[in-house]
Image (cartoon, rainbow over all chains, first blue to last red; front, side, top):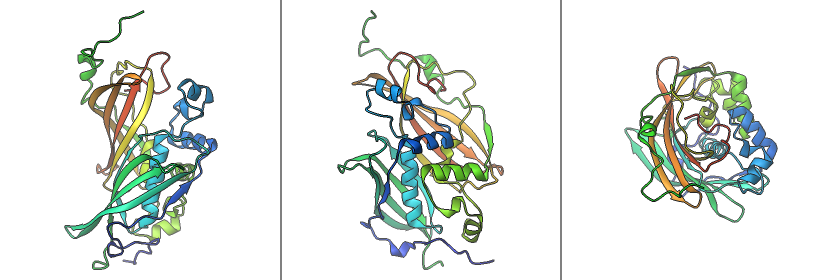
Length: 150
Length: 167
């Protein structure tokens, strides 16, 4: 069997509790919300119709919660590379985010352990608004390959 | 003018409660390369695992795969009976994903949604109904590839938003 050529794989031994993930900066615009609506089949009008958003008391259309989840998924999967596996992703939409605001995905390692020979890493993740508020907190669990096993 | 609700009132009637545990009719999707590419482009994720067949095949995945939240595009079908939704407006409260194995381009994924809990809260926007549903994604080899547990919040009266009342 040919050896896999992984994309920038992180090893379990490279990770320590307290490590911060490289930040992932997103600059969403209304066009991206429309693209996401089409790609995900989510046609709830508050994400593309200014009148519906205004009637609900918002200054403009709002970002799909699930798009924010997708960015947090990208934060984690991009960080771990193709050798790791995302096992769990939990996201809560505590606050609304708007297009044309910079949204920064952040994360840090909260636990690293070996269970049944598998290196597991717990992450605290979230979407940070420009004023530092975490609008969308979450967590993830990933498995990473180990140098011992490779 | 209608009387305002007293604290003892609940919107969760026995009829609503009877929907807990009911499953939607299964719907099966072919996972198409271009749908995966379009989804990855829409979320802005440049990972070649979703778009570059040669690179994806050289990794431990061995094939093109879909981004984790691609599940969102695989919409469940309706419940066998329409859910008697008492409210007009909808908010997404969040999702919990569990991934057993990746969704691969070429897979056939069957989607089933089940309401697992209903509860209500009283706040600034009046009574809000919280609906917790578990959506399962099963591949063509009958393996459960993942689940998504969603919390959907409905509230308020008036003309129903698109998507409200699908259960």
